[in-house]
Amino acid sequence: MLDRQERRLVILFLLPTSLFMLFLLWLPFIQGVWMSFHLWPFMGEPKWRGLDNYTKFLNADYFWDSIHATVIYCLSTFIQLVIALVAALVMNQPFIPFKSLWRGIMIVSYTMPPVVVGGIWLFLLDPGLGMVPHYLMQFGIIDEPIYWFSNGAWARWLITFVAAWTFWPFMFLIILSSLQSIPREYYEVAEIYGANTFQRFVVVTLPRIKTAILIVVMLRLAFNLAKIEQPFTLTGGGPGYDTSVLSILMYRFAFMSGDFGMAFTVGLFLVAFTAILLLPFGWLYQRNLRRHSL
Image (cartoon, rainbow, N blue to C red; front, top):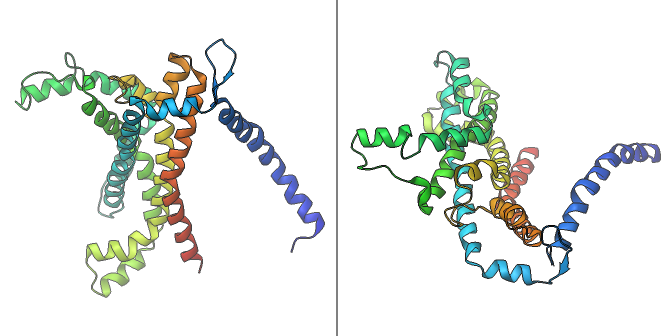
């Protein structure tokens, strides 16, 4: 048990963080909840609307378009995980030469601003000037240029692909560092008992990188849901609302339609959507920690 002086010291250390959370997180969040019940036009005064913003949002066609786009965009997290896990397993092998060089090449996309990466892919996929349509026609894969971002289905999957290409090195670096912390003796013992490569991965590797995997999945899911600059650079949320993930939809209401009340409403849906996605992974993470602490 802590004595009175120690408790005061703990409170003193926690006070700055608590004040930071209160004034920069919780008070704005509470204000956002309150403003979501208002009509708040740009350069105007907020007017009470009750649940009108919520009923309008839930009954609008763009609601399901946005949810659909957001779910597909979140899939980039798991595409990133597969690429990062395979790359980390390969780079962790002792026979790979020039590891530092390969690691440097692999993380190039993550060192560039997402807007720049989006602009690069926008140019590469341009029907008139882009290298991708040019080579696809040259090899006879397509007969004419494809206007990728004019088709909602194509556009949704392309912003997902570009996000995966941009951010997978983040997962790669964390998983690789976790792999490198596993003692080689564990693998040697598994080999002595006759375990093949797959069995060594399941019995030795996976249990020891599970925590790292859960952490990077939660972080990337949260970051992907909050990101706006890259998909907005690629499509502007179009065509229509087909690529308007919830963060872009919130931006469109706030700064293009000037309806801040609806923007707060969409923002709360984004918070709820994020919490629903993260809760299962958070539960798995806590269970994994408890299991290792026993």
